[in-house]
Length: 174
Length: 437
Image (cartoon, rainbow over the protein chains, first blue to last red):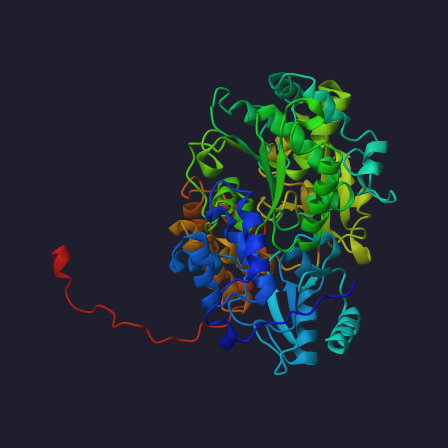
């Protein structure tokens, strides 16, 4: 398994967003699945996050126009869901599960380990923009606790040693 | 018992439709198509299948609430928003047998007369959403989905819809709101989704595991299904065991085994030779059970009789090293984060509980804290909120306080004096004219 890095488009390039032909084609496909345009909200936002790495105010305005909603409405939806990045994320977002089964099996040790190794706590980024640590609620993989999700991929039964190996690999590959 | 829902686990290329067809896959849907939809519903009612998502509501009855003569479209939604702490069974079914889920979706859609079905899967499950997309493409290519399925004139489209990180969207009306492109705010019931659901149309929301039971009920019959387990608690059930056990994982067992069998026989007992202290029998929203209650039978009715819930069948096991006050803090953190914020008792109550529990864990407990926690929990539950999240945080926290009161008392006895804080406003010192004082 090779975790894909996130390449976030810098904020200055996302102030005004227009969807290109490829995006428009995919949005049109999404519209066909639902009886209302509004229902395409989450799929289109996901499409944008895939493309730009995060959801800037400019992206919100573009989505609102395409879905015939107000930017305020779209912003309300974006802010409700935790997985939409509202700031440019690091290349690798380490999402450490902190809910019960993971805590019972050592999530706190992993959090301390990341703090020692990378110098970042929850919500913080390394200065070079490679890693970002988030404490997240139950990832639904409690049988493999403690679990850490890096970008799209799950890493289960983590130990400080396995984490060291993973972080080294990711730092090399970026 | 033989493996039913997890029969594909360990089989080579188990996700491929040819493997599924060799194992007798899609025969249940073919059989359903040869029957009138009402007969399919009756078969599911007779099987006494109860919803596997947590509430345990009889599946066939849920379908029967859909108005028969409704002129417009109806919808089926497969709830794959698995996010109850401790639960990881739906992911296992999707990982090994996505075709079984699709066949269940097709059977349920046919029974209620839906021509569009959505699979709402939690946003974190990137990999499993892709698996489902591939499975849908294969099923379409084999003519089990799409237009005029197997020359019967029945049409069905299935779409994967990804959530974006909100526990509340596992609640069916919040899920419907989210699918419609809004914040996941639960709706007041009634009207129930079976009458007014997604896009204002009759909608049935069923869990992945519930749907995965349907192909087997159709091919082997309601009587076979009802012969597994106990009366009114029928069929195989996936139990997710996590925490301090030797072999955490998903175990398929008939409803009616005891938690002792689940924890000590199947999951290999407590790790590092420690002793069992307590466990959550059905996800973290179920009241906690102590080691003395390990002989409770794991089915819907027996758990209810023991004052708890089978929920999603997620058994979280804690050994004798665990600090139950910290367990309360951990769960309060989860619920305070996941409360949608719509109802005051839940939004404020969960956060207030977290404040108190944080203080207790940090060594600043106050003698009134346990009763204060119980009081907050009382006001946030028992129908004071639109959806059951108020109960979901109240039940485990109040059960922790009631059953492990000695640990709360010990934390308070260790407490340091609370550092004095400046009050944000001047306290009232004069005469209160409003009350005639």
